[in-house]
Image (tube, rainbow, N blue to C red; front, side, top):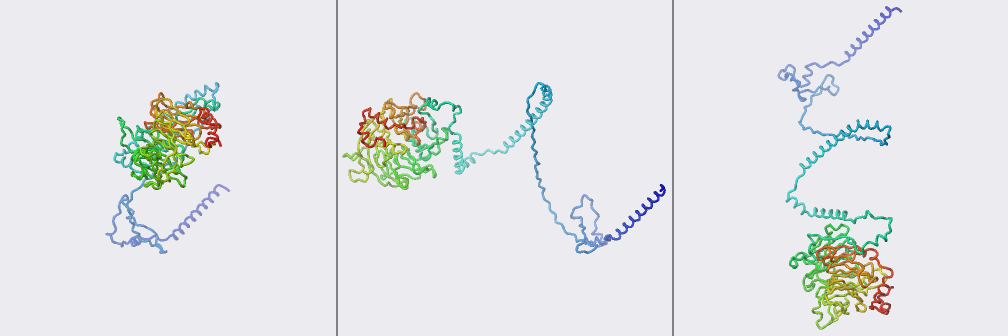
Amino acid sequence: MSAKEELAKKRERLAELRRAKTERAGTAAAASPQQPSLEEVLAAAGIKAGDEANISSPAPSSQVTPAQTPAKTPAAGGEEGGLRESRKLNLTISEAVLVEVPGKVLETYDKVIQTEVTEEDGKDEDETAARIIPTAVSEEGDKDEDAEEDNNAADEQKEEEVQVMSEAEWGKVTENDDFRDFFFRSSKVMERALGQQKYDILKDYSTDDASNQAGEDALSLLATFGNEKLTADRAVTNVEWSMHHPELLLASYHNPLSPEGELLGAEGLVCVWNLRAGQQSEPEYHLRCQSAPTCAIVNRYSPHCFLGGTLSGQVVLWDVRAQRTPVARTPLSAGGHTQPVVKVQIVGTHHAHSLLSLSNDAKLSTWTLTKLSEPIDSVTLHDGGASGGAGMSVTAMAFSDSDVNEFLVGCEDGAVWSGSRKTNTASGAAKGKLGEKMEGHFAPVTGIHIHPSSNESFQADLSHLALSSSMDSSCMLWDRRLAKQLVNLEIGGSEYVQACQWSPSNLSLLAACDAAGSLHLWDLAVSLEGPVAQAGGPGSGAEAQRGLNALGWGVDGKSLAVGDSGGKVQVYGVRSEVAEARSDAVESMYAALASAGQYDTADIRGGGGGAEQ
């Protein structure tokens, strides 16, 4: 086929395409609906044709609002050529709210491989580092400067935002009970956490423990409790450990003294210290009363309650769950005590117990803790003389753990009397009559303690042994069964011996303290000639020169608390070898007493009180 023929065919094909296109265009025009005229559009908008007043000139495009633009929509309901009637629009103006959505933070990190540099590629790495390090340093410096600027800006913003409270506002906050409870509770928690015993980081576990303990002292000072605002210049009258919480220590304080030596009329104070809170802490509780407490104890059947006897003669009961002041107290009348209370003691069992109190005028009263307004029974102790006990002045008292009816009293004239509560039920002159009189001291008795051998950990009953301390600088050992003085434990010097007490863990160990500030430990199974350990006293520092007034053993017998005349309570740790009893302690102690001529074999083996069971 020639070129001309091919060109002719292409022209024919092109003409056919043009004709088909023209036919399709005509068909589409015929099928399309007829557009409404201008009059129809105006009629649909509610404007009559020819009414020039209702037709305004078109506004500029910048001033046309949505309300002025008619809505052109096809008519509903299948009506051809019709338009839906325009709807009136109610437009309001609202403020725009800007919300900043933070972008997603992409965390990146760098991987660095550390390798040892060899001599061969050391030069290349040095050259590379010379190029990289300045750049890295400059980048880090820029980052540090930016971070410092951001921190300074944040600090300035915080300073602008912080508002200083006025004194009136701060006073309202601190007076709020909820805030005070929260603050004191939180501070106690922090004090307990910060006051834990320090751990010995230099301890060598490869050495023998015995060699380490050989160089230790039998007594080591663990903590000193005191508060300049609360306890300064207040003499400690009594200390006692809690049997419910072994870390709590109860201490009662006398009224402070003026520079002239006169008692100031301050409120009585009793503090509960926590050994785990540290010696710089505040007391766990500080309890108040109107008169100075002469003695205070922990209620052995209720861990929340404490009891105390006061200088005015009242017996008070504190409950730390309620308030700092007494929740109950005995009356200041003839039905109660009118002289200073010497001793308070709870006797009985958990379900049937009572409170005993003894005042300086030898009046012994029995109370129930649920009713302190009136005593169950009261009796005046006497020696059976014609005077009926008139003029007897009692300074100390102790009950036996094995028999709550048996007790000892120490008098101002130095005599020690045995007594029994069973005489309280007698009539006439027999009521309140004391038993045997034991003479030995020639000055007022300051303390008495009966051996606590009823403890189950002891294998022998030594409850017939008793201790007494006196202002004649002596501490004496008595046999209540024989009404006999056994040993006079003379304390060096001429100072008053203020208190004495048996150890609860070692049946031959006892402690005594004097007005010179010295603490003495005696082990009767080791020696009767002198103490096995001493602490404090003159020459051991200014703090120890204060006279010691009271002492109390810990529940485990490995801690010992003493209170001085300046308001400080010191806690000593007792080494285990001293605190724990030896297996032959009873035989060794009686052998020492027999060698001193104080016991016969018949007394030891036939008396029933001193033999090992």
